[in-house]
Amino acid sequence: MQRAGAATATEIALRCGGAARLRSGALVFAGPGNNGGDAWVVAAALATAGVRTRVCEPVPAATDDAKAERALALPLVELVQADEAALSAGDVYRGEAVVVDGLLGTGSSGPPRGAIGAAVAGLRAIRERAATIVALDVPTGLDATTGAAFNPVRADLTFTYGTLKRGQLTSRGPCGRIVVLDIGLRVGTADANQPAHDAPSVVTGRWVAERLPVFPADAHKGTRKKLAIVGGGAGMSGAAILGARAAWRSGVGMVKLVVAPETLASVRQAEPQSLTAPWPKTPADVQRELVTWADVVAIGPGLGAGMAARELVERILREFTGPIVLDADALNAFHANVNALSALLAGRQAVLTPHPVEFARLTGTAVDDVLKRRFDVALPLARHSRATVLLKGQPTVVTAPTGERRVVASGTPLLAAAGSGDVLTGMVGTLLGQIGDAPQAAAAAAWVHGHAAWLAQKGGRNPRGFSLDDVLAQLPRAWRLKTGPTRYPVLLELPDVTGR
Image (cartoon, helix red, strand yellow):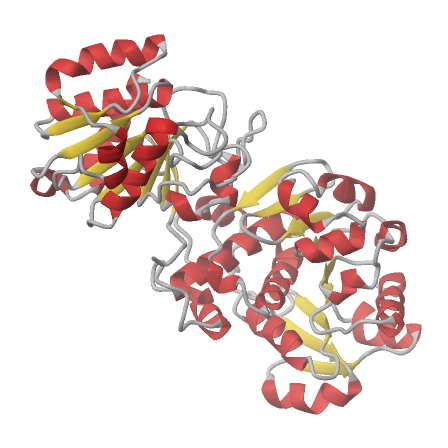
C-alpha cells in the first residue's frame, strides 16, 4: 500500500503539471477499504512534497491498513467534512488542480451507494470544472473484473498496480490513460513475454519489435514473401483492395488479388501494383494461381455468402496446404460447422480473425456470451481447430492452440468501421509469411493495426473526421517501434482512446 501510494504521488507530480500547477493543491477522496488506504498514502506523500492537500472521507476507514495510513496522514493534511448533499454537488471542491478518486477499488461490485454514491456524483460535477481526475486502481463505479460500468467516475488518468485488470481492458472509456505501476506484488504482469497466473498478457510495441524480422541488405520480393488475397465479390471489391494496400504498407514482397471475374477490371485499375486472377474454378486453377505462387493465402475480404463461397473456400483449402488466414465470409461459410473447418485446416499455421458476431455464428454461441467471456471464449475453438483465433474488438484477444493468450489493447474507435478487418487481414497475412508463427504474427499485426489508428487520430483526438485511409497512411509510422525499456516503476501505459 505504501509503495502504491508513494509511486502514485510521484507520478501525479510528474504528469499533472509539476509544482507550478500543483500550487492550487490536491483534493483526495478516500474510501473505507484498502483503496482508501492507498488514497491516504497518496495524500501524505503529496503533502510531504509541499502540496496543499485536503482529504474528503465520505465513509470512515474500515480496514486495519486504511486506518493505519489515515492515522499517519492526518497530521499532514486538512480533513474535509461534508454531508451527502454537499458531496453530491461537489461543494467540497476549492479549485484544486488534481482530484484523486480513492473511493472504491478492485473488490467492489455493483453501483456505489449512500455517501460513496454521493461522492461519485460530486466527482462528476467537479470534472466539469476542469480539474484533472486521477483514479487509484479503477475509477469508482467500474467493476475491475467484468468491466460493468455503473455510471462511474470518468478519470483522465488511472494508476493501477501490478497488472492490468480485465475490466479496464473491456471498459477503457472511464479510465482515461492507464498506467500500470510495479509495487512489488510479483503476482501478475503486464508483459506479454512473462504471462503469470490469470493476468492479461498484454502486447506492447517492444514485444512486436522483438519479433519482426529485419530485411537483409540483399532482400528481394521473394524474401519479403508473396501473399494471395481471395475475396472481392460483386460489389465488394474494396475489401480485397484494402487488404492489399495494408499488406504493401506492412512490407510484403508481392500481392495477388484473386477476385470475382466481374470485379477484375475495377481491381486492376484501383490496385495496379498487385497481380490479379479470377476465382479458381477447378483444383488445377488453385494449383496454378495459388499453390505454385503464394507463401500465404488470406481468404475472406468481400468474398460473399452462400454455397458458392463455401465451395470456393473448401476447394482452396484442399489444394493449398500452406499458411492460411480466414476472415469474414470465409468463416461465415462454415456456419455452426467447426468440425468441417477444422478438418480442412489440418494442423497448418492458420489464423482465424472473427469479430464477435462471426465468432458466435461459427461456433453456435450467443453473441452476449462471446462478449462476456471475451478473454476465454476462443480457447475451445483454437484447440479444436488447431488454429490461432484472433477475436477482434476492444480488446482484441489472440488465442493459440496451446492455450496461450495475448491481449492487444492498442485499438481505438476509429477501427469500428467497415473495412477495418480487411486491413488487418492484409497485415496478418504479411506477418504470417515473414514470421512463420501464427500466434505471434496475429498479435503483432493486431497491435500495429491499433497503433496506426491511434496515430491517425493525432495522438487520441476524436475519431470523427478520420477514415481507414488515414490508418493506412499511418502504417509506415506505426512500424517504427520503440524498443527501449519503460521508466521504473511504470510497467505499461495505455493511452486514452476515447478522443475526448
